[in-house]
Image: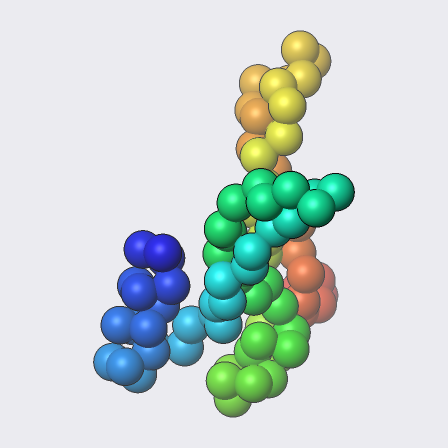
Length: 84
């Protein structure tokens, strides 16, 4: 609930924010909980807000620690081209 309220407050102040929606999750007829669905920040988000879709946009993600790696985090480019 706090995430949705924060998004609404930022949007009211002109900040481009992800759309949010409450989701009531029911599994096998049993209520599991109330969750917040948050729109991904991707190319369609950028287009909807009139932002540059050709720039570099990275998505950071955590992954299980790999014993061969010093880092448990990575980033993946989802828009933009490699500089030449």
